[in-house]
Length: 278
Image (tube, rainbow, N blue to C red):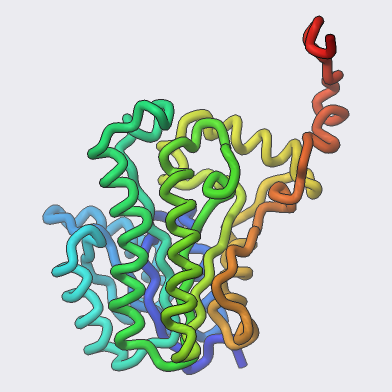
């Protein structure tokens, strides 16, 4: 019997087969779960076609549009979910966005509008969708969102998204407190850098991949399958005592206080600028 037998839920954020959300969806489906999916509204139907290319083999119970920046869309989407499932057991929010020009500039140069859009899309959307999901969620359910180490420490090139992820991780803790009396657990996964559609907007992303692989104790980056399995654990009854946590799936990169074995891997000798020790 699979971890998600007789369990149903919602996943937001599948864009293509390289999306972290698709890794989660595949694991949950493999373990017997039934899933409803959202996609960005698009009159041409291109967005729905794109997500269906990924999920049609996973027996989707609902594929419907939802703009997470609009309360009316969120209400309409979760009404459809309720009509299909009645109650749900889990909810995954894997959504983030900021204007490209406001990600690729220094944080000190971010525009007011870019900041608003990034925090609305990447943080408030989690609060708004979690609220809607909780209204139709069984007690002892689970909610999960996706973060990144740039929300804890400065990661060059991550810039404004780091600010948004810091707010997201703080929201996880407060929602865990709010929903705890119902036994609903709220957690986030901090995945190492993965070459996804969303990541392509981040400046110096190829450098982030190389740095992670060079510095991480395991000497590599993670896969969407690994993130999917850990996410599945956090959404399952096996993690019934875990809430308000930000769980790292990054081959140990986050534990490092210096470059570790990277110097020998890259055959680089650390040097001190002349006069720096004077």
